[in-house]
Image (cartoon, rainbow, N blue to C red; front, side):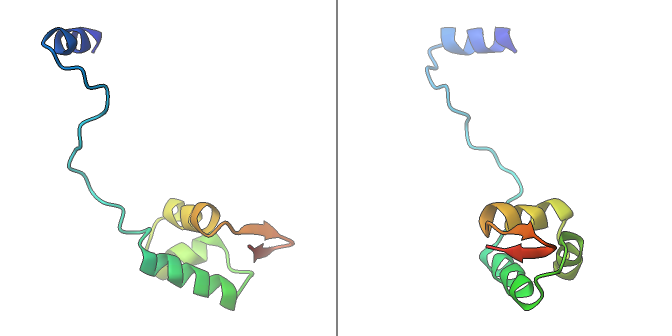
Length: 82
């Protein structure tokens, strides 16, 4: 890898940023799913991450990401609070 970097820089490429790559977009963290998760939590504050993931058909990790990182909810006394 270091040899490839040295060759790239010696060829005149001065960019250090990654080039854009084709990849799968994150469809699980769409605004629609975020809204649905928020509605589910407001309807039942005792719901758990596995139930949210199963209801929406998304992975446990994406459900946890939406709840904790996007909506900024945390568990207090077995209830989700903002």
